[in-house]
Amino acid sequence: MLKYIPPQDKAISKEVFTLAFPVILSNLSRVLMGVVDVAMVGRLGAEALAATGMGAMLFWGALSLVLGIRTGVQTVAARRLGQKKHDQCGSAFHNGLIMATVYGLPVSIAGWLLAKDFIPFFIDDPIATPLTVDYASVIFLSLLFSAYSFVFQGFYTGVEKTKIHMTVTITSNIINVYLNAGLIYGSEGVKLFFYETIPSLSFFSHLWQWTSFPAMGVKGAAVATLVASLWMSVHYSIYLFSKQIKIKFAVFSLSIDREMMIRQLKLATPQGLQEMFIAVGWSMFYKIVGIIGLIELATTELLFTIMHASFMPALGVGQACSTLVSKYMGEKKVDKSEASIKESIRLAEYIMGVMGLSFILFPKYYLFIFTDDPEIIRLGIFGLRMIGAVQFLDAIGFVLWFALSGAGNTLFPAVVESCLTWGIIVLGSYIFGVVLGLGFNVLWLLFPVYMGLFAGIMVWKVRKGDWKKIQL
Image (cartoon, rainbow, N blue to C red; front, top):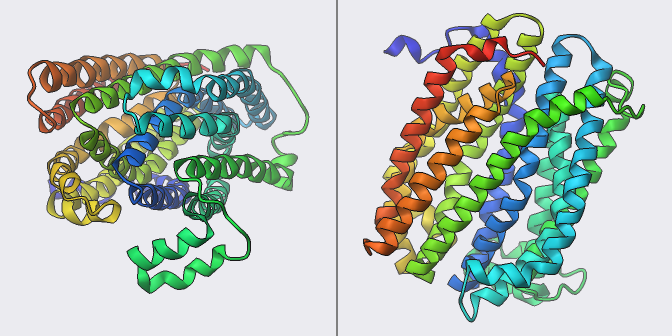
């Protein structure tokens, strides 16, 4: 057993780490900023926390289709990189921008205009519902910019320029947190926030005193996200002018490759629809939790924020794995693709395993970051321990999902994850939590079943080996 702990292929392990490390740092910054965001909103009360949680989940449901576009760009760009067809990497990028615009522009406008019509279906509370409408109507305007950012991420990761991703993400997250504090609390409220929560850092409140920030509450959090998303897409664009990007990949020689576009759509469609279907499923899960109680919904938002934090670093490992699998398949070195998968799982287990153990041993410390509400903390302890218990399984399923996507098989994991989300999480939550009235804790007992089945099925599929024959 112990011999499997250190890397088995040191060269591949180093390559995975080198590619993944900048993405891990950028994701850690995103996690940290996300934690700060939720901690700021959490001080406004359970209604505000529930509102931003539901609004963010619905926004993710709409944005998640773009994950398929990102995968299509990354997979094709990495495969062409392995084939030394660098100009076609640029073509994959151009195709992605077109697809992102066609989808993102109308959905951004529709979300902004129609939030007041679809929000009440998901959350029905005299205080939380209007807050959710305020939040969602603004944050949907950022969808187009977020879609462009996903395309940039797919392109830069596919051509192994992940340091760009790190720089852009950290900068935009700093902007987001800065504007969050100012717009949620206002210039005067920021002083009070620091004084009451972290008095040792109260001198930071002077950073918001150079102008007058209005106190906008949850709507301010959405405006901050909108501005940060706009900056992210602009910042990514600036790197296109560097010589090694501009010339090598011909990014300013607009080329629309119809045949490649079709390939990318075939990759993007199943995964994008799956991600949307799953995101809607998780939105329904939020609705079911909301039926049980508003405190339970606020607790779920905290638990999902922490769970999101645990797998964001592993996301960098998965993206590196996807790029290497695709690149080595382009070079006809399938054995190296397999080695990349094994070393990526190993690294992901290191990261998520440590996080999982800390969730099991110290759940209160994590929850105290976000709230001092004793009921939310009491409910959250059990859920966080269950999340910690499944981290080892999640690491396996996570990496293998990316590995199959990098190989060009986006349909199989899409179908499996969609079926498990709706069949176990959504249906199971409704039956056990609402119909049988077993309460909040039983919902989190479904997670080991969900994660275990997904990881097991992904292992079976990868070991079957049919992914090695996919041509792009």
